[in-house]
Image (cartoon, rainbow, N blue to C red; front, side, top):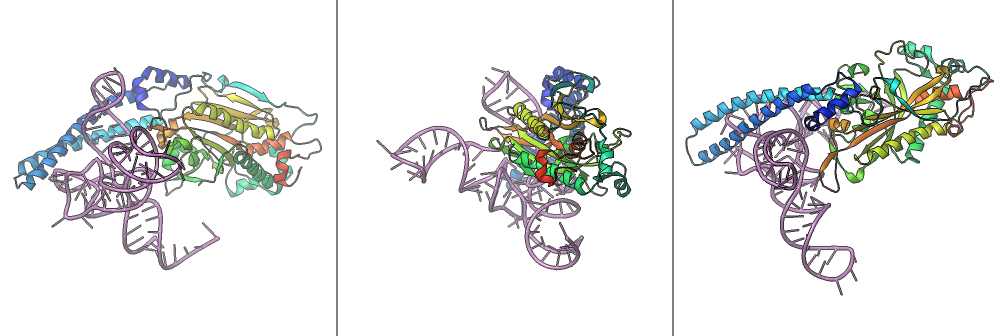
Length: 421
RNA sequence: GGAGAAGUGGCCGAGUAGGCUGAAGGCGGCACCCUGCUAAGGUGUUAGGUGGAGUAAUCUGCCUCGAGGGUUCGAAUCCCUCCUUCUCCGCCA
């Protein structure tokens, strides 16, 4: 959520930045409501102040045994006026809040400007893509051949885009999870979190999934609970509506969770294999920082994710997303893309975003500044470290040998207990 | 799921015949003072949100005592609903 004060004070600037995202975006409506809202609040405040003092007067008069009938009647009338104004106040507050909740974050001024992903900029390419002499199989064929994943039966017990890991496949998936968590918690210094995967609407609103992206999520029928689309949601919200000490920052957390996405609107896209599915595993990195710490911590977080790809010896590149391609809540975002032979292209495996105080404002994530003693909003950021299913697919495809076996990356062997499949 | 108890500021904890209490007191935090060694003492200060005035320091209104409604001239204090926690029972991995 954007700060209404900033919108009020720099409307042209905010408008300009938002239009970099999408020319249709505008803050004019919120501004109009804001003016009206403040006017009503001032009026209501004045009446409330009057009621307060008059009521106290009644108390004193009664103590002195004076008759208070007329003044009581007067204040009762006042109460009616207040009630009317308060209704207006509530309505305008609500309206303003809803508008603010549906306005995306302002993109960082430094990021590439463009309407869509064609304006994204490749920042670096790591690892050489070697095309082998034999023809590489796609993971959706190879995993079935090797009985690592059962797509058909997954569909039978759930729906399309569901699947079952089996045997060494299940073991490999679990190995990847453990490997990621171990490196992040030891080498990179993150605290491990194992959060609920069902969260309430407030948490979903806090990180920006609600109210705009309701149709992307699975929701419980009779309860205010949603299946998380990413661990970002529960982990970022852990300290919601709290005031942290500056000493607690940066707060670095990592969490493994399954993630659930309805993939509404992506019919026909990535229909085969593990790339786009309704349930997948992910190890997430989340940080709460001060504004000053944020740029550096974001670079570090991205590096922490990249290092996973390097340790696994997977070729990848880092792409900086343009204003038209970054997510709703993000101010700046790097995508890490891993080489996938079956796509003959790089495919997103991690998305490392900074949100500024956009999420913090929604979630009530604050800290007290040591220097000034004042309360500020935290900055939040997160990134996949990494998406496990896509890592699985990348390993299977990139590490397949001519003889049909799949080598296991060295760093994973102690986790799998085998060195090839 | 059933019965009972409770939910106050960073923490602990006063506050029920409704009014001058946004809230005593303590702890903790911060600032200053005093004291020649790690200690102790004194004084002051210390909630969030949202408006208004001012370049600013700052001044000032309103809202908030789990959340939301209601009664009343006036509610932390009374009533209703919900949430959470604790105890007992039931169920259960």
